[in-house]
Amino acid sequence: MMVSGLAIVLGLVQVAQAALSKEEMVKLLATIDDRQTNGGDYKTLAYIEQKQHGKDDLLYEAVVYRRDADDKLMILFLKPKAEAGKGYLRLDKNLFMYDPSVGKWERRTERERIGGTGSQRNDFDESRLAIEFDPAYVAEEKLGKFAVHHLKLTAKPGVDVAYPVVELWIDPASGNALKQQERALSGKLMRTVYWPAWNKVFSPSKGADVYYPKEIRIFDEIEKGTSTTVVLQKVDLSALDPNIFTKAWLESKSR
Image 1: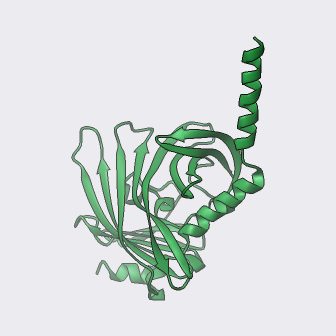
Image 2 (image 1 turned 90 degrees about the vertical axis):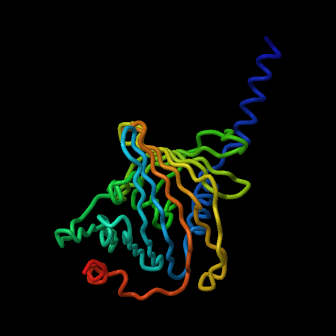
Image 3 (image 1 turned 30 degrees about the horizontal axis):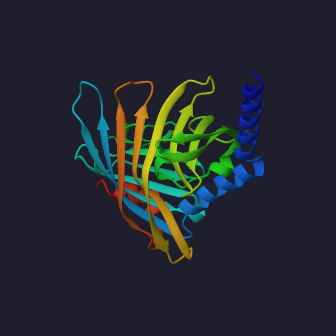
């Protein structure tokens, strides 16, 4: 019994030593945010594959434009033909969707399924974890071969996010997030997201590397058997035409 009790005490000490302080967690989230944010503009080609049980797989192609300094985002769909010209524009913390078939703009929520897929705005946008969430330490765990920090993030008051509770698994060795679970306020699990690999490209405007996921794997926890894979290619950090981040520019692409 004494040995068992000692083992428990030692185990608690190890857990306490592994746990991060609030300051350390905020710093870790801020580092993740900074690594994915460019000092200038950002453009990438996104291939989005949607799988649903009992249905044909769907493949979409879109161009993602970002201007991180102004918190602007534009997503323009290129393929398939039925989706070409559809797009999303984020301005002043508002997300709008344009449907060229009816020629109208509609305001969307943060839970909007981009192009009807399992992806959402935050899958393509810059990271704002330290700005939007308060972290709490859960445990040091193993995720596959990686020793990771498991954090529970709760949305800050007044911040508009897709899900108010997010659990995040971070590899401290690489500084990359590897897994995320998104929950409703009730605690119900809505989505599970994996980032199996990351790339980096040097940004002249930032003077440092910008990190981006090579692939994003999204699993719908409500519609079982539904998953979305996003592959990002041809990342370009050159300056973009400011007109890209306007409703008029997107409308012109569908004429």
